[in-house]
Length: 61
Ligand SMILES: [Zn+2]
Image 1 (spheres, rainbow, N blue to C red):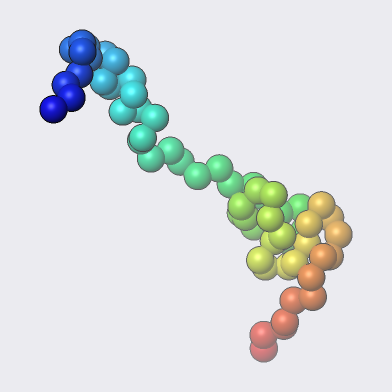
Image 2 (image 1 turned 45 degrees about the vertical axis):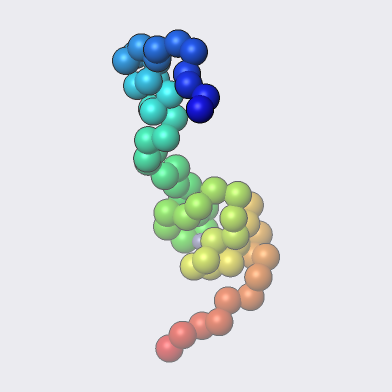
């Protein structure tokens, strides 16, 4: 069976494991409705992207 040729030091193990950590999600504030939205996506609340309405939103009453 294949075996690792060299021992991985604890710092190397930890450094590699740090890439797998859960990072906080980056949020973006909508310029129209000031709600937190995901970047590079059309706002799900007002349907705007880069200050322009892109999709028509169904109004709930
Ligand atoms: Zn919006």
